[in-house]
Length: 279
Image (cartoon, rainbow, N blue to C red; front, side):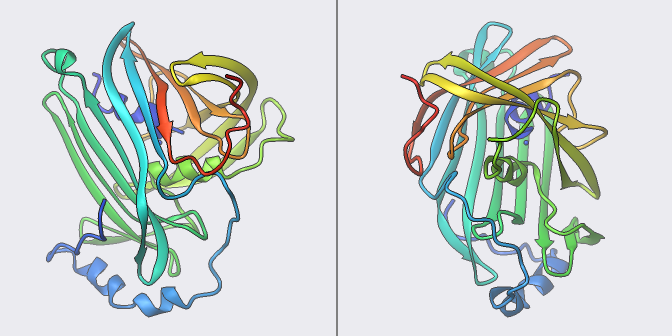
């Protein structure tokens, strides 16, 4: 019933060197062998921004129905290269507290390799461990040929398709200064074997208090029609700082057995001043 909710609440927004390809992942191996065409490709998009950079680390307290049930960490451990292109290694983990683990143990890990220039993914992996629930998934994305490789199969994808983590970081690069309440941003996300449509609705602005401080925020609501890691029984609402960084400050969602909220507790390695921080 709660499977996926600890991680999904932040992912709906949604490590070292590059790992070698598994021996059975022959399609991904073929993709790697063509790395030079990606390194020199000049047709891929470029999205200038100052929202984040390597070194950023955001720590959240995850509460379940008034209980501090876990900790979530979103980080960009460092810059690297994949297929000869510069990327950020983005890592998202969620772990239940020792006390809550007696009731429901959570150990989730998501990772994406995000193109620093175009803000799209090249590789995505997830490892979900929630109670007795298990789910592992990985995918490589050929953003030149528009093909995804998963479970040793290939699937057509639209240009600059996202995974759950890269979609959140892409949303942080957008300009909301002229957004009106009700306006929507449309994205495409790939998971398992299907590309899902994701709309992100602008709800307005609000000043909120969390352990990390008081922030002026923009409010967004992801709207997922069917399937994928973004699916939720109720509304999901996200607060991002109303400035160039667009740091996530709070995420709230309703589930069948209550509600889950994640609030920013501490941060470091921010890519410049946080204009939305009041105190």
